[in-house]
Image (cartoon, rainbow, N blue to C red; front, side, top):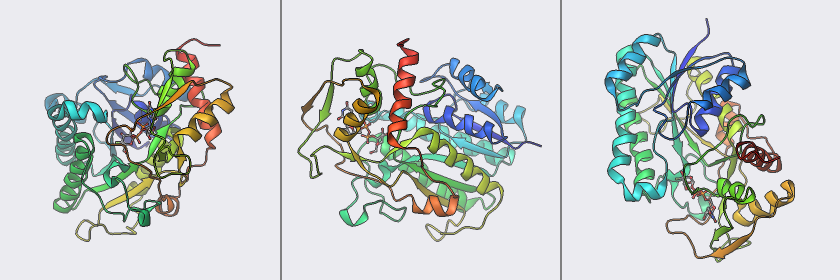
Length: 352
Ligand code: UFG
């Protein structure tokens, strides 16, 4: 019988790509999403790609009664992938209570349900934000780099959620947890049927670039060119969302096959594994903009402005552990990734 995975936030950006990967891998998927930052048409996109419709339960993870019904209805579940969360760094500074309530309350409810209904495997959607600005000696960043004080309530909720999962795994010996720390996910499915659709003015670089190319924005503002990097702009590890999605399937497979733990971090939580998901290559803001212009033939007017508060100068992953232990690798060339982002933007803006 097909294994069944419940995916919270499964109509979101990374969630929807992961649902596609799971379905292509033969999993049955139940999406739980309150559609606060997505819409029902995403399910149409997933169905068009995979030829099969995932179940969508339009439920907020904070609504414990409704969540109970979902777990009851779809039992037995083999694993949960928990994406559902608020994710805008700036907004989290303005509305910290909302962020703590949503992001922490949701995980607590999901874990309660898992324990109650005997679901023992969870993949948690974490972020490289937990590392802050790593010291030079920790670049590229491995899973052993120290977690640093969060720079925003959003980042703090990721850290607290990781701590909750460690504590839960320690107390409940039947639980297995995989923490996936993403670097900067970009791009869209090659079909251009699903992709990233931020509300309002995008905060992230790639959607701002594609919207500028589409004529929705006059110009891109590059936040700072006086960093200690080769061209002065910030460096990130941009990872293709389709590659990232595949890592989730590998993580679920690993937990379900009950593979032995390779590392024990910290020593008292041996059923928690952490993986950094990136390409291992850092690219600057200007490299991204220039490569985008080259591969798409679109001009991106930009100006250099002051630094953005809270920005980290440079960070990129060591994906070595994920490569070796999960048997996963980010392989898609950046040119192809940037083109996929542009193709998606063109489709949703009806540009030929
Ligand atoms: N940038 C610009 N102009 C823009 C937008 C972004 O120059 O209009 C620059 C930023 O200054 C940064 C780079 O592009 O140097 C990437 O910025 P993003 O906002 O796309 O990504 P961040 O690395 O700042 O944020 C990401 C995730 C967060 C996470 C954070 C951890 O979006 O969820 O990494 O560092 F918390």
